[in-house]
Image (cartoon, rainbow, N blue to C red; front, side, top):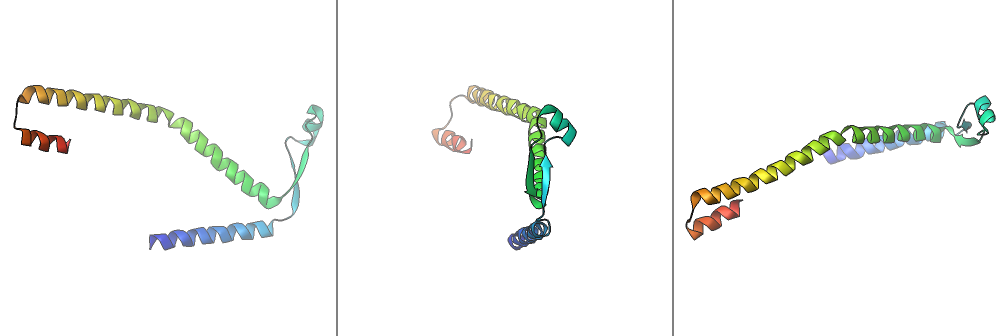
Length: 118
């Protein structure tokens, strides 16, 4: 059921984007800078693009900027998690050594069973 809901959502989204593209086919001028500032700096390039490309490109750029922003924001969290994972691994090794020292010699069958669990 969830698979059909996902496919329905993708189909509706695709149809909405198709309608948006068909309704906004007119070309619009896209400039890097305002006209006066662009002329002053020599960067007065103008591209003629369909409006739907400008809209969808802006949305895609916003999503990309959001992903990169989140990735940088979560770097500290990922670093802390890596440190904690290393600490857990070290403590598990230390615990295994302490268990081996405490228990001393034991039955071979029990040793095999315990090693199979860990």
